[in-house]
Image (tube, rainbow, N blue to C red):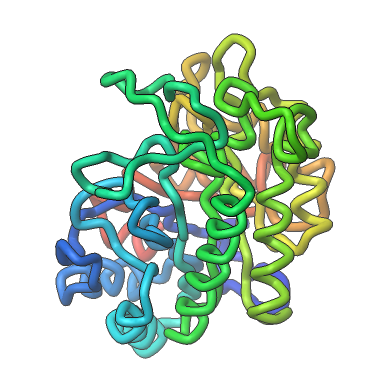
Length: 325
């Protein structure tokens, strides 16, 4: 199954091998694309990878997570992004989309000089400095939605095949989703439907702006693996709503604790989420987590855990993973 074609929305992938987003810090300090970064992705594309999802790019300065992170926050970024998209399309049949993100209360003050914001004034479980973020008001929420849409427009103008909206690994949208970091009492807090209201508004706005032929993936940090945190049931309910609001792919992964499942380290270790999500939606489900060999990737598909297999660290180490597979 790994070599089979698959339709994603109105696009077609040559196979079901996906390179998931992994930060490289290969951009300039201003977030511009470098020749080194283009070559890094080119190597994985020419190897025959079906879909590349580039590392998370920040949609605004206050959403920046780390030094030398790629930027999609300003129009000046488009030129470098276009060079990357053009190179991948010129050298391969690989589809390539850009993961766009806002770090929320995981933004670093020494990186983002605008201060940190979050759904609630709650210390993030992964912050060691105990910094309390500013609780977002309605204007802040509207700005974040606007910034996601503008980022997606830049990605489309640069010639990419789509975007992935980052809602996982403890970043801003994941902070809205998790009851541990969202203590709001307005329309963006409380029940799950309220906690993912911002996700659905972003999906609606991006789809309206970019049209039906632009792939939209959403990375869902479905389970926090923390007491009182998000659950598998939450991830299923959220995925059903994301499909209704225009998502083409649900990429399941971890929540506030990041890209690990503390209860499982076997290949495809987020299948506790991916299987029920796949049963609940008609769109494609992407599963990553500990998949290292072609045999493991094939098993993920054959066992019905997902429609797409994400090969992370193994492809980071071996740019020819796809051709070897």
